[in-house]
Length: 322
Ligand code: SF4
Image (cartoon, rainbow, N blue to C red; front, top):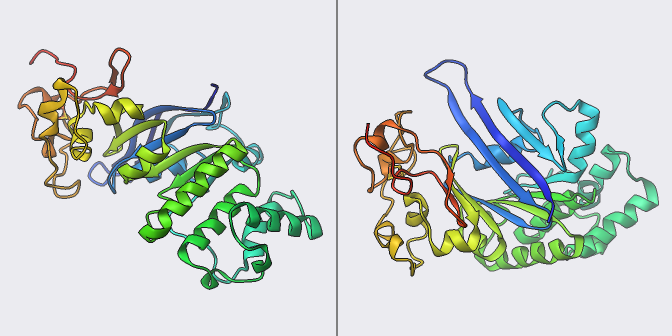
């Protein structure tokens, strides 16, 4: 398979003063294969949604590289960037707030075609109707407004709007978290079907383990702006190596004897109530396995294990005490 997207050492720093500076995304690298689904998993505040917006440069990175189909995006001028953005689209989390309530479905789905000068008139009308059909909406309802649809149908409108320019890479930012449980599976099944039909690649942002388990080929776990573990979903879910991953997955028993200690890890505090001092491992304020010494003083690096996942933890990569 070919690599469609590569992110190298990407960082985003918000704020100017040293006390107000937030490193929302901190030296993140990842690579996504064409036709696959890459899951980015983490709690609220982990930086995953910021990373999603950095990729098509909806917000500008502070440093690092974004390479789409072999082409660096960070120095592209507006016109070239617009062309690339036709191929990289985002489906936003909340279909209740992401759709303009004053626009009809025809306007909402057809707008990208007009903005990018791709279609107009009767041809546009037909494309909108075909797209509604494809995502399971009734094409007779083109003149309805968003409030006339259910939550699941509104997310289908959001998906149709993202797909109308025939993108190759779809960034799905918590695509089902605002929906009733009863319709979440329908939307996920639709995304799986569309991926097969249209040969799409997905970057799926979520805090929901079951969504990752169902959808993803690769997974990365983010904590306070950093990836702490990443690899094949089956490796990570079968044998989580980082205490944070193990805590999130603790309901899934592992058969790997090396994992038994990690399975005891549980998360009592949250990101806000256990702030990181900025020195040592950023997970150390919440990590029951933290050791005084290296965990408190040295930031662990993301290092690959032979034929397995990459992990950033001193427990896994034992280093001498200083
Ligand atoms: Fe826990 Fe130390 Fe590993 Fe950080 S480096 S996750 S504090 S054991």
